[in-house]
Image (cartoon, rainbow, N blue to C red):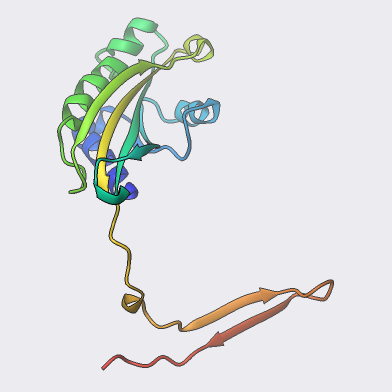
Length: 185
């Protein structure tokens, strides 16, 4: 469900931004210096990050009020104004925000729930500003239901066993076994 929501957000951003950005993708971890380094290579761009959540209003804790962060990152050598507003050659951070927020707000995300805009922050550290970068963080909430638990009877038969064993200081021993499976009637 979380991956589906991330994919829906990425797809919506790609749809509204098209070729105006170099990348729209999932951020593998929280926004930090490593993320900024990653972004330097692919600006202007948009990155989506799942930032956890709180229990939703559903019964028996079966819902998650999730928080997704969407980062707009731009770079212009000509200065702050162009980083924020763009120019005739490249989109600015304000333009990305002005396209993404209305596109995602109130929109269903992969039939999981409706995205709600919760805020906008400027995250450009001084070190990034000196390098001509602008970073804006858009926050969206999405209350969604956890999927129903899977029934063990729906799982396929255990067919292959593969393992490496080590007992004490002895050598590692590999085991591989293909087990016969029975077809269900």
